[in-house]
Structure formats: C-alpha cells, structure tokens
Length: 129
Image 1 (tube, rainbow, N blue to C red):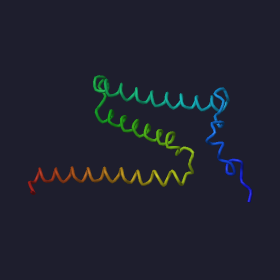
Image 2: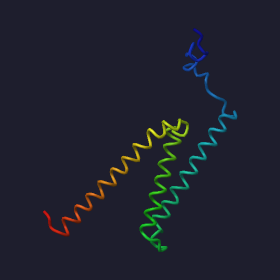
Image 3: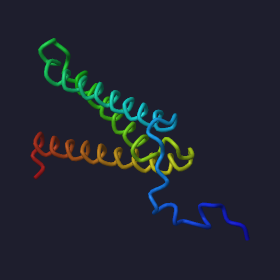
C-alpha cells in the first residue's frame, strides 16, 4: 500500500518547517481575504448602528427599521457561518442539512410566539381564565 508524503511521515507537522513564506502569493491571498471579511462585517455593523441611532429621528416607520435589522442580522449570521464555519466550502447537501433544520427551528419559535400572543389576547378580551 502506498501512502502520500503527508500520511507516511507526519513528523513534518510538528517540526515547525511547514510554515509558509509571509510574502508568498498564497499568504497574501489569505490576508486579503481576511481584510475583505473584516470590511464587510464592519460595514454591516456600522449600518446597523446608524440605523439604530438615527432610524426613528429621520421618520422611518418602526416596521421598516425592524425589517432592516432582521435582514442585516440574517446576512451577517449567514456570512459568519459561511466564512468562519467554512460552510461556503461545503457541498450543497451539507449546507441544506444544516440550514433546513435551522429554518424550521426559527419557524417553530415564531409560531409558538404568535400562538402565545393570540392566547393572551383571547384571554384578555374574553376573560376565559
């Protein structure tokens, strides 16, 4: 049976000789990607803070502010999952295996909150209990 260099001799992993040159194209690409991710998350966060501070004072309706917050939060969460949890590199089936239960769980929470709100309204309006 034939092993690759990595499988046959793993001592190179612990010898400290596996580091890349900081000036290599691969290193520069990784640093550029880190700055891109940082910039995107910073811009989205700044937009959220500005919206939170000045959204009401410019006359935006509350529902529109909330919708923007929800959309920006979903974007940020999805981007963080894609980049930091490496789901952007996974196969489509793996992504769906994670996202479909998450979407169902969010629907579950919303459904129970709406049901509880309706029950409280019925109880208050008709005095059932």
